[in-house]
Length: 358
Image (tube, rainbow, N blue to C red):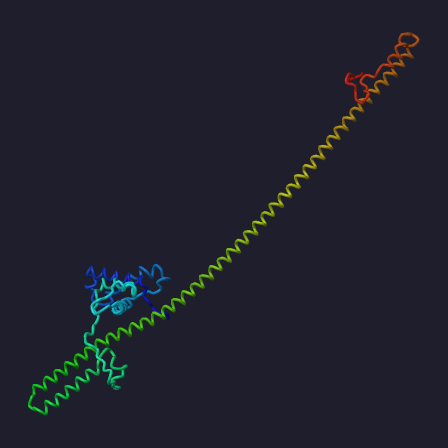
């Protein structure tokens, strides 16, 4: 299961909503943690997770918001420790380089003082006590155990000397006890302060370790997402190429069909033109032949009429030859007269000949 980690934008939205509730006085009226942090969690989810679940995959509960507020306090202290120049001086401008919402947290929750150890850390370099090296030597937590131990030994020696000189001096023994209590109390206070710092260090290290693990998970998720994206892009490109190829083949096939249809139509038109030309030539030949036949029939009719006239003329000449010599002399002239409606020298009918002979 992936570790849930807040983004900088979600932190900023949390701080803004917390500031609004704090400024309006609503936060002070809410008594339980659930009532205080549930509206903040719903607001953060509505702004980020519900709008873009891929970029903000986590839906936060009011417990998550409560824990985040506590963690931001330790994060603020850790960053403040990093930008610390001296006991009371800090490089505030460098804070946002370590944490983007550093100054925003300071505006909402106010500044939090670091626990400063004003006591001097004394190390006895000449005497190393192995009994004090349980946690890494006398420098553990910044405490000078040798100095404290030497102070106790010196006070014990003084107590022995004072006791041997005046056993009835109760006031000396009371001052020694108070001094011991003061030293022990100061030591416990220093130990407590250093334990808190140690806890913060351990928490920061754990937070960094978890952050590194989370970053590795994020990089892995990003790589997987990038691979899936590349695969989808390649698949989309292949589909587009296939579609383009199909479209090109369809276009080529359609153009070939159009060319074939044009060639077919051209052949049909050429065949029609050839048939029409042949038909026209045939009609012209038939018309010429018809005209020849008509002219031949006309010539034959004229010749037949002339023959009949010649026969009739001879008949009349023979029949009436004895009665009238004039007719006999007329007959040869009639017979030798050109045939009306005859053919000219080219075989065509005479244009001046009458159409009727009888």
